Image 1 (spheres, helix red, strand yellow):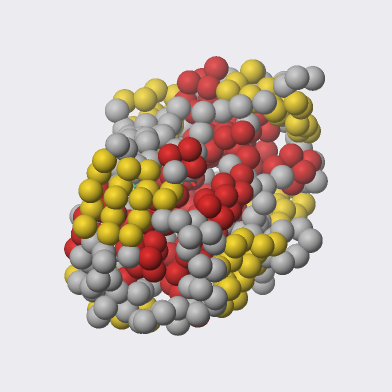
Image 2: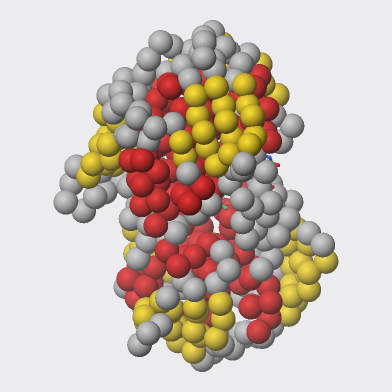
Length: 422
Ligand code: EPZ
């Protein structure tokens, strides 16, 4: 297993290119299941979860062929030869559950392993299943698998989501594109990645209205065609590097970042003392004075995203004053706290809230990654700390961030990747 060695205290300055969004790209790849034609996706990030999704689609019989030498443009599509999503793949990546709706819509049956929990929570899929039953699917859970069938096809209906679940919205949205009649998804998630998926599906011939609002209206069609689509920039990667500018007192231009996708992150950055300037095709972020403590509550978009909570906590650990961070989306997303405290942070967790008392500086230490966003929280802490930080188990990071050491070194960070057997 590889690890990072980070020597902190250096101010970051320069440009970082923001890649394609993991949480849009994974679903856009799954949309390739909905057509026998070819879906051409560009701006594909080179991260482990994308590789896993390629493996999953290929074992369904779907071709996933790189169009360019770098593999940043993929051609996806073809006949479905297997409707089974096996445990060994689904257990590695929860987003695999999103093949359920498209398989039902296109092949009228699916056998998908129930995804287990993960580090940040139990993460049930009950809303996905209930919604698909509303569209006429028969669902049977057996031996850890979801056995779903809709022999006469899915039929549109009104679905009210008790919680604006991103995954449930996406699964049901994709299933409804080929259902008979109209489907309404009420209390749908409004994350920008869903807007990106809707834009691509409509290019494929779907008829979807209401993206970005709380209600999606889908009029089913007979079949979807191929299309070309560029994956949107990764707003969480963008926000993450904005925190790197914050914690190092730096000045970064984040190429491809879009202020409108960042939602409440912009306001929270500015409250914390990080200036955010919108440019033509970039966001410029720089620290203007001391970091200030702020209170954060994670919420569905356009609220403060849970995927930015760990990164902000690292920055707030060295802010002037106290901060309170409340995590309302996942039940166990504070695993970065003990590791930050080992670096000298003063964070106390009380249930779903954490009180952070800012300290003058953090000190480098050997720390361990536990999940994707916690991994970067520890990198940020190392960048701002005095001394050397060694971060192990960075396979967590590789799932969702591309070329972190290269991007950070290019703007002045002292970071290197070592293989643990060295
Ligand atoms: C997506 O997960 C993202 N993953 C997550 O990003 C992100 O944190 C999350 O949305 C919230 O924004 C991908 O897009 C691949 P949810 P998802 O369904 O779809 C509960 C990252 O770091 N719930 O909105 O699983 C669930 O337990 C990852 O990139 C049910 O109870 O999120 C959780 O508490 C982490 N029943 C909450 O809703 C269900 O059927 C949010 O889940 C579905 C969800």
